[in-house]
Length: 118
Image (cartoon, rainbow, N blue to C red):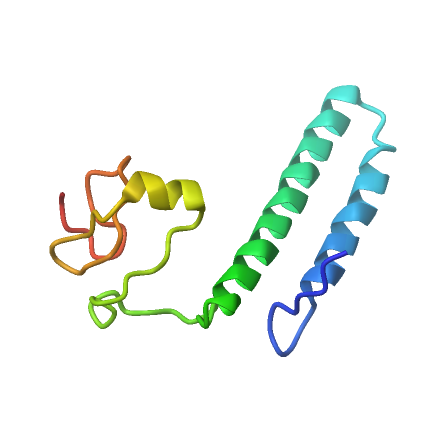
């Protein structure tokens, strides 16, 4: 089980995952098959996203970055945010926004940080 605290105060990621697992057990009791399957799909996606978040959080911390720090992209021009995944890093290469220096997503025709067009 993952034991990553989301913040200094409030629930931990571990408690959130336990809550989701409890919801899965409750969802299995839903009588309508379609509704039950829809709810289970939502919960499974939530569990997967929580695990991905925990892994990404640990990865950023291991690189000496604060995962919860909101950064003004213009201030961080020399050091854009790291890509979310290794695959994204490969796809993105060295393409950065000419306006703010943020790493650009190949699927977008604008910078998600400052809104400038490619």
